[in-house]
Amino acid sequence: GAVVSQHPSWVICKSGTSVKIECRSLDFQATTMFWYRQFPKQSLMLMATSNEGSKATYEQGVEKDKFLINHASLTLSTLTVTSAHPEDSSFYICSATGGNRYEQYFGPGTRLTVT
Amino acid sequence: GENVEQHPSTLSVQEGDSAVIKCTYSDSASNYFPWYKQELGKRPQLIIDIRSNVGEKKDQRIAVTLNKTAKHFSLHITETQPEDSAVYFCAPFAPGTYKYIFGTGTRLKVLA
Image (cartoon, rainbow over all chains, first blue to last red; front, side):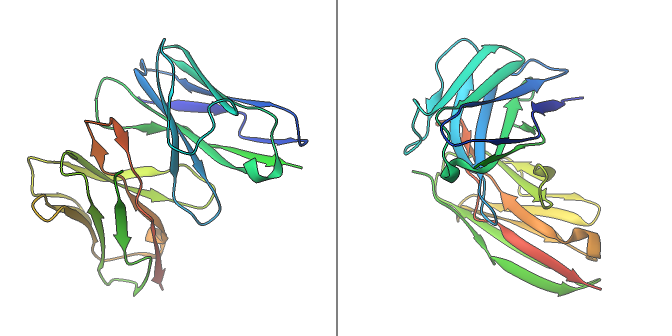
């Protein structure tokens, strides 16, 4: 149990376009979802926390108008990278918590390359 | 904000030896302490966790010890194997802020 999927697993887009990444909890209700970004050989950096039906809470330094997060249901959260630039190229990973309040379940990640 | 540090940043051990990685955190309200293993290009995988009311937990070759007073917890891997080679992260959870802050990571290399 406790499976989280992410789609797409990788995406290449042109500079200036927008990209949407989906994160789904397949077999549990995710009360909270987290979005992380990871650059090569670095740690996971928390971008934002989202709860179903409410606005996401962004970490300091993360532009909320650039990284749009929507958590419309208890099983789906989306991250949209707007007007992507090459410096947005990274590995984006979502996670979700549910019944067990502490353990977070990770999606497989999305590798974004902006050309 | 919360500050989480890991030491060492890299660790090379001979197969069969033990490895210890330490995680130091700053938020005294943290109450859940997981360790993750991440292989290249993959998601972090929970390998062991401990809650604040427990001092030590063991699962076969892996153990975690917690010192809440000193605000650090450590990952212990015994009888290391080449497949233990990966990057390991701690990510203490603070209920007040409701988030996990990942440590800086430790690259473990087990030499056959």
